[in-house]
Length: 375
Image 1 (cartoon, one colour):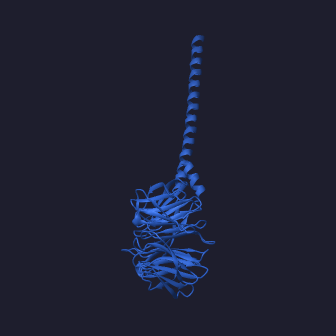
Image 2 (tube, rainbow, N blue to C red):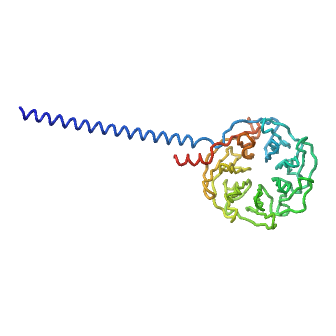
Image 3 (cartoon, rainbow, N blue to C red):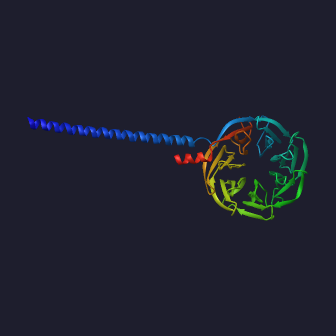
């Protein structure tokens, strides 16, 4: 009898031990599952954060009288100037009020625009062979300057009060020429390129001008101090139209159409350091120095936003859907106390009304980095 009771006690003890082990194991699995759930939740939150759009559409300004396509932009005096090429007009938008303030009409084939704040003058390049000069207050025409072969992109240098004009349409007339913004006179000095120029950028702290010349499949570099002209071949990509410059990091961003790519060039060496697939039919390109981003709108209906990890490495951050044909834009960083806005010209097409879409730039570069680390 005693032996039987002994055995029963041993059996009961063993069963209790097994039950305790099972309970501990169950608790451990529960803690692991909870920890795993927290990790998945954190990862999901990081992914959602990462998916926040770098450009967010916040407003649209209707341009009811604009027909056909738009070309390039300029800004100044609290206004946005937009070349409404299809309407032979320049649309003047009040940035603070976000309304159409005025339209300069009767401008044949307007393409590039430059604004001189010191002179309060608006310079409009025409594909018909002239640059038209307007008073920035009354919008009255005050001068015209001849450019045989047409004029397209323009840039303003406040230090010298010169308007740089991409002009000409072949190897003989293709050049960067200059207008004195004070006198409205074309200067005798010009830089011959060997082909028709497209977008170009001026260094602010250096002497160089970087010029896209699609006919040559090159970027042509002009040194304004020495007058030396250097040719950088694009090596495998062609039809280089838009351009942006990161002067601090010595990087030139070039949009090419064949194939659609973002090409990155080291301005110290002329060497191609990166080539990334990009949006089709791009005609403007902007560098966001604060966030180290490149914004590239294209006629296929997207803005591609690229993030710089370092000067040699880039990644596609997002594709922001827009509208078919919306390929020209303006980006000038934060304006005063307002938002950091990106302006996109949307042409009238089918049931699509013409207008200016306003996007707010979001997420600082540091936040982008933390997102990437989280996922």
